[in-house]
Image 1 (cartoon, helix red, strand yellow):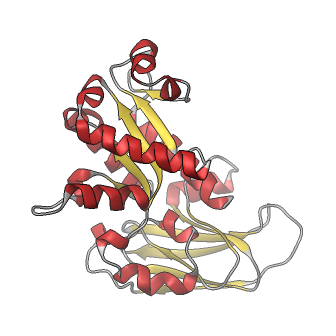
Image 2 (image 1 turned 135 degrees about the horizontal axis):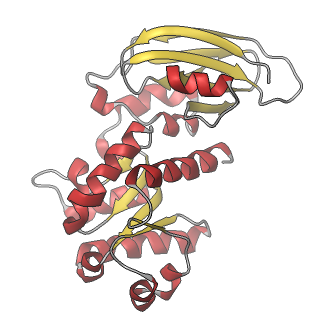
Image 3 (image 1 turned 180 degrees about the vertical axis):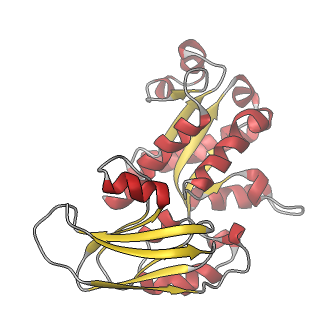
Length: 262
């Protein structure tokens, strides 16, 4: 596959890579190891995607050495491009929006997205869970998703003293593309997780899209079937047989695939 490569050198988290395109093309921001995998034709993790409009802007998710490749996926055609690095507008890396979310946004919305209040943010996933599962599963999962460029809404990072729980949760549910539901014995007995699940089910039924991504933690087919036959019929990942990092990778792949086909 033919591609154009740009060696960007060492960049800081929060800087913005701006790629000017002569036509629609795939733009991938890669760290060193993933660039090597790309060159070798192996599976790799990237930030960016297919851009129909120019310029394409991608936020650098973390400090390090970065590359940009521009290509059209093996299809016939010609493309031209140029790259520059902008300083970015965020005061801290923790506030950087997910690069995956920028695939879904028009380039001219960048400034608005950076300055938007927290309740106006869009998220890739909403993590619904019981507090008892936070230490063992949810916090490591949220951390792994963030490292993969997936923006995740979950209570520990989004709820603050004095917040209205219902309003904040409703905002997170409505602005998240997918819902990751950690089903466990504690989940079955809690009010707020069930409230969140009801909201996700309502969205799924109304839209017709499959947005619920279930994770089974310390439960089996019988327990989930007893709780919800419809959830028991969904393909799930089990924490007793799949690591959190692998689950995070699979979630990121689902989101990336949905974004690129949107």
